[in-house]
Structures are given as C-alpha cells and as structure tokens.
Length: 355
Ligand code: F6P
Image 1 (cartoon, rainbow, N blue to C red):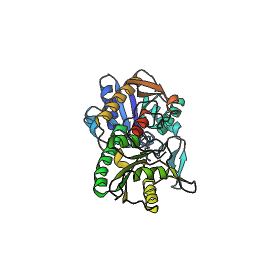
Image 2: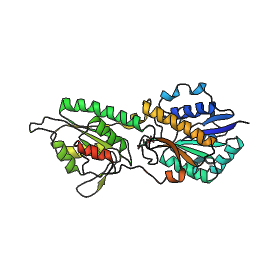
Image 3: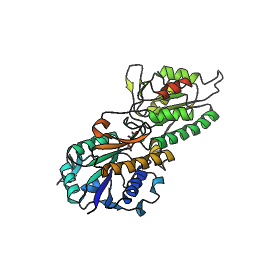
Image 4: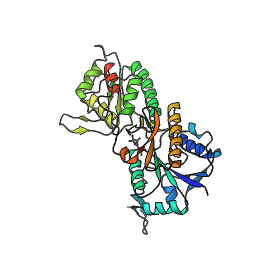
C-alpha cells in the first residue's frame, strides 16, 4: 500500500512555490511506494465534496520550478480553525472545520501533510500537529519574516524586483531633478526595503522597525539638491513604515502617498512622484537563489516525512539544511534588528532611516 502525502499551500503566493512542489514530487519518485497529492486552493481541496486534489507525477511537475505563482493556487482566508462555511440561508459563518479535515485525511488515506506557508500559516500547522495531524512545514514568504530560517524562499526574488525598480526610478529621478518614492511590501518587517535600498542605492530607507521623523527625511532630501534646484533623491519605503505628524498622531498606511503629500504641503522645492510596487514583487519567475532554496526545502520536507519527524519545519540555518520544532517557529518573528550588519552598512554609506 502506498503512503500518501498531501501538499497544502497557505497565505499569499510567492516565487518558488512551484519549485518546492516539484522537489517534493521528484524526491518521492526516487522511493518506492509514495504518492504525492496536492490540495487545490489551500485547505479547500481536502475539505471539498468531492475533494479537489491533483495526483502529481514527475511529468506534471516537469519544468515548473521556473514558473511564478503556484499551480495549486493558494489562499490567505482559509484557516481551517476559522473557515467560512455556507449556512442554510446562503450566508457564510466562520467555523472550526478541523475535525472534518482530520476525518478526510484519514478516510482518503493521507499519512502526512506538507504545509507551505508563512508565519500565520504555521500557527495553523502547529495547532493541527497538536490535534494529531502528521505535518511538516516549509517556510515561504517574500517578507523574510521567519527568524528560524536564514531566508524564506521568494524573498530574494522580491528584493531583486524591488532593486530593479529602484534602478529604473533613479534614471528618471535624475532626468527630472525629482524625488521619487518607491513603496515596497513589508507590513511588519523592512527586509525588502533594506535590501533594495542598499542594492539600488537609495538616499532614504524607511522601515516599520524605525519610526521616522519627517524633518530628518527632509534634511537628507535637501542635502541632495544644489541651491539652484539641481539634484535628485530616492526614497524606498516599506508599506508598514510610520511617522508622527505635528500633533503626535502616528501616520501609517498608503505611506508613499502620505510622504509625498507631506512634502508637497511643506512646499518642498523639487517635484515628487510616488510608485507603489505592490504585487509585482510576488509575481514572475523565482531567481536562481530561490529556486535552489525551494528545491532544498522540498527535498528536506519529504525526508522529514519519511523519517516520521512530524511537527517540524524544514529550514536553512547557518548554511545547513535542517529542521526545527513548529513550537519554536511561531514565536520567532523576524523583524530587522537595529544592530543588524545591513543597518550598519546602509548607514555607513549615508542612507538615512529618518531617525
Ligand atoms: O504578507 C505578504 C504580503 O505580501 C504583505 O507584504 C502584503 O501587505 C500582503 O501580503 C498583501 O496581501 P494580498 O495579496 O492579500 O493583498
């Protein structure tokens, strides 16, 4: 009798998800008696009647490691502990459907689940593991906000896309003597902004971990212009960055627009334009680094299942491929540490954090 693993994606997509799926399938194919099945759209697939699942073989994952997105589709609103269930009157009510999930896993012969997700998704992994599900996690998020692993796959691709955006914005900023503001993803952690600011060459980098002061930013921008108004400047801001206005009110959300508005209100001398990079950072092919990392983690996750090392997550730590208990994972959110060498480096080349 074959052993069956169910792959489930959770949360937002990110480059490398297909490479993980391919790696799990290819690794399993080298062993006798394993079947790899994918659940469509997060936990929906295994909860649907009839099930919405894909039975993978080597052929159907051929070459998918270079494709962005995920062939399984994914969802960030399908937590099985708080899952939208259609009621008799047609409305939806959130309910705990994990008993049904566990029943379906058993009835349809699944021996284990490999759950690919970010911080929030692995809170679900842990709770499922505590309810007896044989589960192994794989870390995924463009925000790089899981500290138990050196990098989450998808992050380097997102940082590369953001860097290319900075490169492009600098050429147009220079041509028009403008200030260009680029807003990148990073609700709670400023890793993408920090990497893009250093790699692209920004003048100002604003991240959630360092609430900024508009006057300090202004001072830096002014230093980039000559008395006759020539010059240009470039700001990279993470979506979760904040500042306090003159009434001590914390300003957050739509942050690039708010910074531009503020600069215009105080009649900053140069023209200002803002760009919100948004989901471009999550789309497209993963760069080589993320394809490799995703492949390593896929292989490792399969082997953890094979060894019955459940309730764990495959990780890459200190140049080693290893694993960690899911209980440790969820406590460790990876914010940019202010003593991190990249903060030191950025400050060392004159990038202002507005602090
Ligand atoms: O958590 C990753 C992330 O990309 C955030 O940085 C961003 O705010 C959010 O997802 C966007 O989510 P959605 O795709 O649901 O709009």
